[in-house]
Length: 149
Image (cartoon, rainbow, N blue to C red; front, top):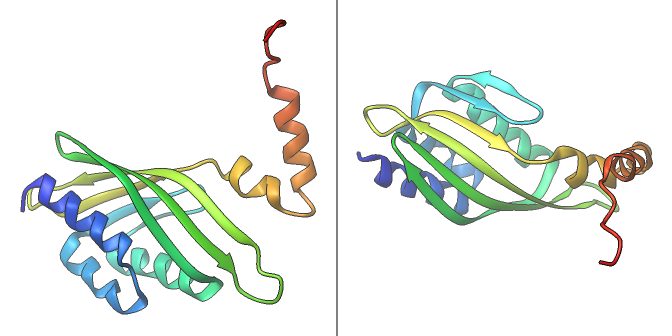
């Protein structure tokens, strides 16, 4: 499989993701695939499947929309929007914008899946207890707009 074909298949996998489709990871990923995001750093298809299983355990209606895919050499970059709602009464709506850097091996399988997204502004700042602190930090380190604008 070419990198372009692998990237297209991996993007479709995420846009059509269901608990029942997790077996596709065996075909799409190398056995020693590495996954990293702001919360996790793990290796192997079973561990990667566990990330998605956990997502379904704690969130209602998780969904990815792939807005763009760019391929450079053996790496594909996916610009995405993720939406979900935390489970339970008064569940919080989640909307995250991010980018996945997916590296492919010679067989066109994903060997590394690295998620880049801003947990501080998109998640922590929205939490009741710690949110105020993160909003204060954001104001403290923001560069003031030039006068006259």
